[in-house]
Length: 317
Image (cartoon, rainbow, N blue to C red; front, side, top):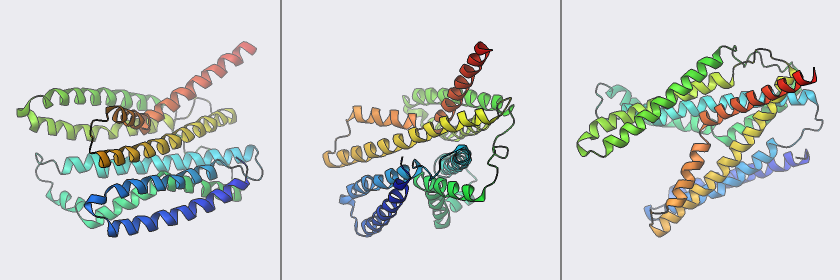
């Protein structure tokens, strides 16, 4: 997008963010149980902030050249890694680890349970959630582009990418973890049909939450592994595919967030929990936005593009 849009979008995002957080603070103080729908309305109000930040991220610099492309790749790779790590930590703190600690069939974890139930732990979790949000990640990306451009350093990827051998380890971890996750889900569905198996079902549900963390590690190895021969051309392909996937993820997040807030408003107003079409749509959106799945698709697309380019080069020779 044109360069001048960046300043306008950042100003609009700042104004909208101030309005949103003011409304959020006011709503939290004054809300009653019968007015819970106001929180979902706030979720819709927040979406323009994300849209404005996305426009700022997609705006050109004053001078676009190969060096700026290198800077963008470096900034985008760092921010995506930042986002991935913080989201994985948040998943463990709020989901997997939380479920494991507070499962009543596990004993001897009272100390950890007290820590996780403390106000300090909740504050830390909220801070990590804020730092790992898409809005903050987009802001980090914009700042990194400016900083790296000013520093004028070589924006290589040597400090980011892992050796090529890590890709196989990543694929093994991802495939094995997906097989285990599907097996546990099927087992849970079978156990759920028997009322006397709830204890075993809850234990397996906890195991499932812990296993969900493994695909994140596999995806990290897959996406951050070098090719056998790294050069400027491969870097250019990486940055283009990475940008497309980042845009796809942001658009999917905005559409999914809007849909979920509208669905929650519909449920609250009508007290109708049988909107199966909407629930199926939201489930599909969540599956499509699952970070390990997106990461593996990114790696497959990159391999396909590189393979096609290699075939074309051989044909030309």
